[in-house]
Image (tube, rainbow, N blue to C red; front, side):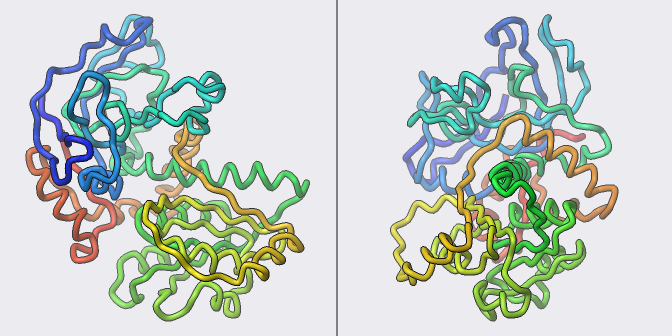
Length: 370
């Protein structure tokens, strides 16, 4: 079968490979499921792996099959799989258990291992292939009503985890009634964050680099009842004079200096969620005494979030369905660039490398027809 692979740590090595179709017998306890891939999302992680910034091949291989955003259809099930049947739609989670205590209890997204196992990223092949095999334990059943937008579930799961962790942390207050939120970055993850917060009743303010006029991402913010501002015209800190300080801020820009601006924009008892992974060496000067004082005297909180587990994927399914009911067609507008066939991988990476020029929100392979 066809798949898209790279040689880790070798820049621009992305290519089409032919590999054997997965064998269900290799998955223990008869819990294997063979999945026909229908759609595979592409994002900055895939671009960065192809740029040789990170990525590790599975043991015994000198290449890594890319892809962690996925949507597929069950083609075959093992003898001990009762919850799925042929023809069901599914999305697979990404991280698999390692060796820490957290991995043992199903919380591998909180692993303390320095080595971790993630489909299409680290030590496990991904989903940019015609088929993959997986244990039913890591598959999320998808209602047919959201089949057309289910490829967005994996990035949404990151948002769901961040919001769930914020809610858990804020139990320290006994009562927390947040009303306003800022979302920093309005790419695909940012827009999904805007959506999730609007479904929860927040007054939401989105921020991106691009100016508003003619910018689809800004239009999508406003279409769901949020505002949009360009940070080229107003800083997050200055925006508090317009909107007030924020009860919750979700950062997903990939630009680390904005974090310190956000830290000065939180309301008392507010929470700042960081989801960007910044691997550079950028530095910035900040008013450290002021920030420290605000956090201490205002009981403010900041935390980082990465990856997601089954619970967060299941929360995402509910939000996708609710969004389709409340704002029909909104999510489909995020699916801006569809590329048919894995053999056209060069087009996908051209879009990833020039996302601004293409005005891409979500680029994805259509591997097989739904």
